[in-house]
Image (cartoon, rainbow over all chains, first blue to last red; front, side):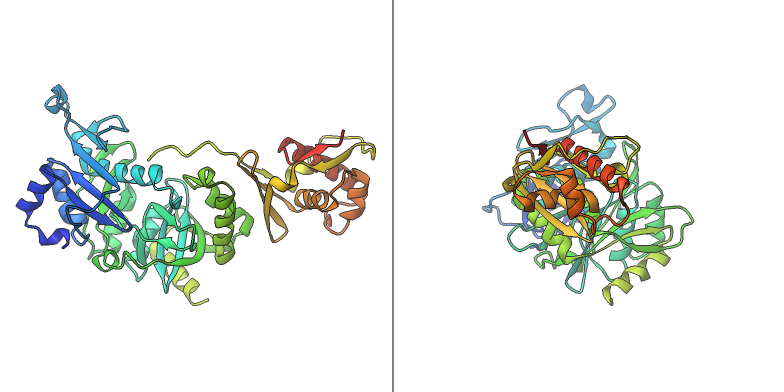
Length: 302
Length: 121
């Protein structure tokens, strides 16, 4: 059963009540929320995600709800709880759905240490994974959204899960988070995609989410072997430019963007080295998706 | 999102090594790799990344610094800078003569700062 199989009233009832166990990649999360924005957000963005049986073990139990205080009505806020505990300060109520997404990212990056986790967008083509590690504002989510609209499969827009045993990249397809100008850019570029409403005045500026393509979600169990590491950099009016990156520097980029590299110790070092060994490594500067996409298609055929 | 664990990654590149500090080159000090059994490394295109099991730190070394470290590890016994200079002539194309001696001395100091080499007592 998938989320789309539930009528909206039933979806709302289950989210408000016992919670809904939703599978995202290898993880199972029970989500509870009485908030209409969250119900609508899950109905839209998780429509093709599987609902687990009630007896299945859940990796996380999360709840997004208004506080039981005056803040329920005065300058209303929203809390994110995981396993009954709030890891963050509350946010304005209108940021409820983005808070769910940020909270789920936190759950994974803070707890899923059976994987080596890297802060990167990651897409797949022909069985090979393209990693796009970069700091915020470098354009990786924009590039990720553009690529998945042009034949690449979404593994994640935020978190690469690397299986230490196989060295494969494990899919975690969830909504793609877009910020500020990239929202309009992707709306124009991917006119068949579904988007949430824009939420303004967050700490990241204006935020909207793009629904992951259904055909990518249903392939959540298909892992990818490492193929390319590309460090993207958005630069206004720049021509698309792909230049080789020394592998030692690519390694350091991955290590610097890894959430739990230190926890994995020497095994993490060896694993990252295997990943880098297997990848072609580049730096990429761009200003236009129309110019950028063909460059990546070219990588596939090298 | 959550904070990443505090972990040091450092770059000891040849640009830093070829700095303006002046050292008197002397063969008297001898150097050895600090705890080579605790080090893991990989080399790509003459650049080295080194993991130090003792600290969890990862270091990115340029050609000369990496060559100095590997020479000390391979030697298994302390070496003076003059011996390193002789062994590394091929690896140090950019540096010749007194420049090479200075560069090796600087490399050793930077590697010492990173905890990867220590002066032999």
